Amino acid sequence: MTIIARFNDNRLGVVQGDVIKDVTSVLDRLPAHHYPLPTHDIFIAALPELLGAIEGEADKAEGIPLSSVTFLSPVANPGKLVAAPVNYLKHLEEAQTDPALHHQNQIATIHRAGLFLKATSSLVGSSHGIEVALPDRRTDHEIELCAIIGKRAKNVSKEEALEYVAAYSLGLDITIRGPEERSLRKSLDTYSVLGPWMVTADEVPDPDNLDFSLEINGEVRQRANTRDLILGVAELIELASRFYTLEPGDIIYTGTPEGVAPILPGDTLHASIEKVGEFTVEVRAA
View 1 (cartoon, rainbow, N blue to C red):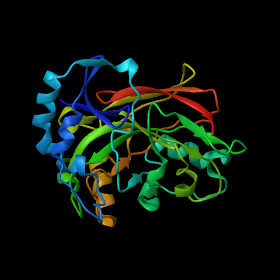
View 2 (view 1 turned 180 degrees about the vertical axis):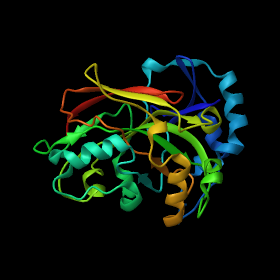
View 3 (view 1 turned 90 degrees about the vertical axis):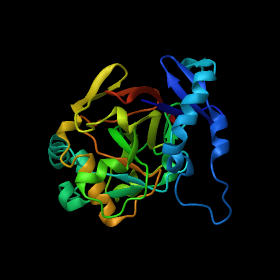
View 4 (view 1 turned 135 degrees about the vertical axis):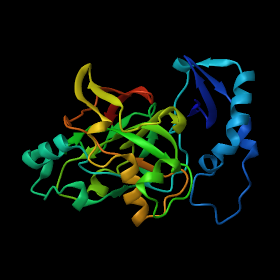
């Protein structure tokens, strides 16, 4: 297992227990590029070839306490943030019955609604925090398992889909409620949180059987297991790759369970996913 993080001033590290080992020198092995630059994340694309060097550098490096570092998004340059709407049955039911959630929009099942894209400019690491940009609108939390694509995928089957996952991470899909399209309401700056690190896919052989939860100010708001996904991770990759060419570094937000609720400046969110990680995020006014 390798737990990889980006931290502080774009440093690369390996997390071991309660410390992080700086392995930034490995990035010197990445190929040089000239304009036009690649539309994928070159580190994620090279990760399989770099893992040996990463582990070797980690063995030699001194440990830095995790409590002293600032975590960035573990993916620096994703080409796409692909998100799954209403992908848990109980969340579908609450969205269909609560006017504060559906705003007279038709809430279709994921089989009809398909997927949507979030702006990559909304992506931040867990240390950055969430900035509520439109305080007059209701802003909600949504905890999600995220799959990070490791190699180009187009029209892959669900049977082979997990072979295209480089790593998994913990995500928050923050959303403003209202009548507009999802992509608009979910793409504000800081509204896609990812982190605190990514765990290589070999450590998560069954992503569709993970317990996870989210607390707001110490109160449990969401608790579920990814076995409750309507479309599992492999099925989401199959669906996404039918419409998009998935590239290394693309991130799939797999959907959130029931229990979504408003967040306000001053709130503290604590999110955790079994085998993947946990983080605490502060909410503030933009």
